[in-house]
Image 1 (cartoon, rainbow, N blue to C red):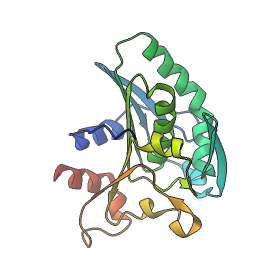
Image 2: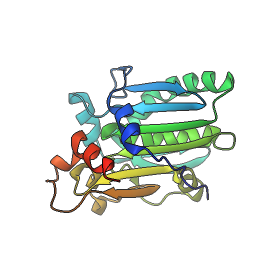
Image 3: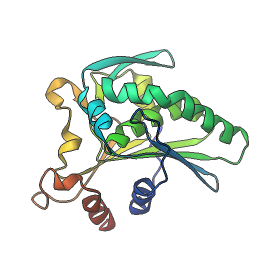
Image 4: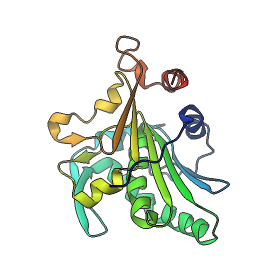
Length: 212
């Protein structure tokens, strides 16, 4: 199984996500694409309005097909990703075809972290044999439902959930409903330092990431 690519400056990566100039799609799928040398960054914005929260709370599971494999995901996040998937794939394909891109790093925060995870799985499917692909979801909610096919699990091996104790968003939807995280989970912070709401704030993530 492919292992996640390491990133040794998570605070800088998180700031890149926080302060990007996003393309606003009107479907809660606000994203940005940055090129830096041989690295292509796909960035996904956190929740910033009512439409985003409608998607967040639309959590019954829905089937998703990629590469012939069927698995189930959070319906709201999946709907948002599908609304922008073709647009992002086309832009990535154009940049990769020009040559020079050697890695794709997907990054998202909160609502955007779930989209980042879906994007990471897709990019690994499309480019994993040619390029290094990895993803980092800061404050990521659970978006996978039920057992995953082995091939899908392998594609998520390059995705890392960054969870600040006791960030409430990273515990939603509840595991009792069948939802779970995918890839690796990196836990930061300490119990008792934040409330479940405060632990999700960007300043809390930056503070704890800077201590690593």
